[in-house]
Image 1: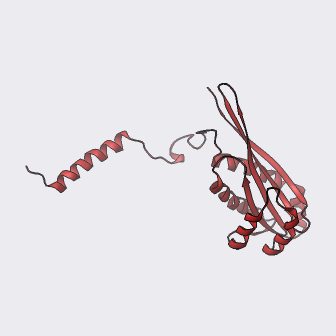
Image 2 (image 1 turned 60 degrees about the vertical axis):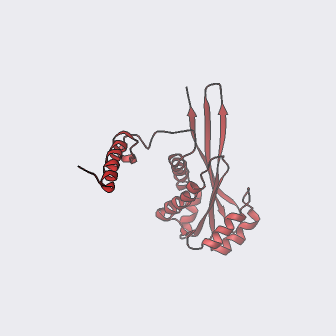
Image 3 (image 1 turned 180 degrees about the vertical axis):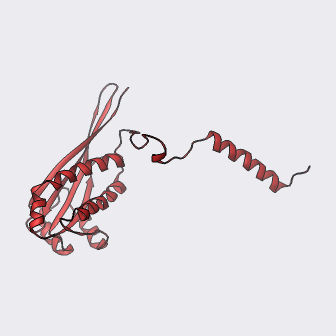
Length: 200
């Protein structure tokens, strides 16, 4: 029997495709493999680490005096500013996602009215670019007026890297604070951490 070129190519594709499907890597979701989301693949900072530190910080914030203050002020306005990356990790997109997570937590808690970064993208982006290493408190009142915020949440991620003979340990910290837009006062701040290690 004589095979046409098209039939021959189809048979080769079917054979090779089947071989690749049977013997090659298989893509899976985290809920399909027990513990897949729990394993650390490296000492790098990942989504799970950031979520853990954020949740711990937000739990502390929920019990703080500033939340009691907000409850007496009938839901004042709040804007979430940039979380600065002071690590060597390429996590800027993860930190951008974290801003949305913070907004969601604050909206659902109901203590404040959240001014979304998406509502005023150009202005909020400009303010984040102007934000100095120390968050220039002289500018806070002006920024508060520009975006209509009474309070700001901001923070930074940083790390400490330690190496021994056969070990490497990296501690990552998420430092967060709440600022009064009218006075520049720091009303709350907290630091949480995770430790990652490579062990022989």
